[in-house]
Image (cartoon, each protein chain N blue to C red):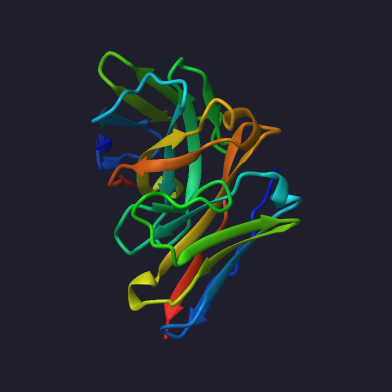
Length: 127
Length: 108
């Protein structure tokens, strides 16, 4: 059974950098069928896609966050990471990591869906 | 950028059928996915590629997608179906993932 686990500080000061890591267990991280994503949810609000990374390292970012977000993947450790700079209170949210899945025929036509999610980690931006 | 529109809330009595819509420009041309999220929990995939159900999701959950509207249908609604439901697509023009704003399903 695939499992994802987020880790990182739960409290970040304004203007500093938020850093999170997602560790994947029970399955491969290096399949061409997988996109590894970060999704966040501010308290009481809906889901917001932050970005996704392909196992090769190619990245896709939400345009509203693109200037502040960097994602990376370490296939040897079966981990992928998120860095978000210059955080403000508006970045306070539960951050989820998730596995995006698609087949070779569906990836370019229909895209991917998130079939496995981490439990989420609350990151609070406050001094 | 592409926008998905969901009603903020839907209410239904137990045993009845709930229909949650997700609107978007020519959404029928995209692969549409649905997630259920209960309070304090991570989202769970309930429908993928418009109408396919992951293992473990009851047959009561079904989906359709045509024109400018996708619909998640929950038959014989139970109290345990009460949750927030989100639709999601991948925009082929930008390679971006988009979520709808979510719909709170209340079982009366």
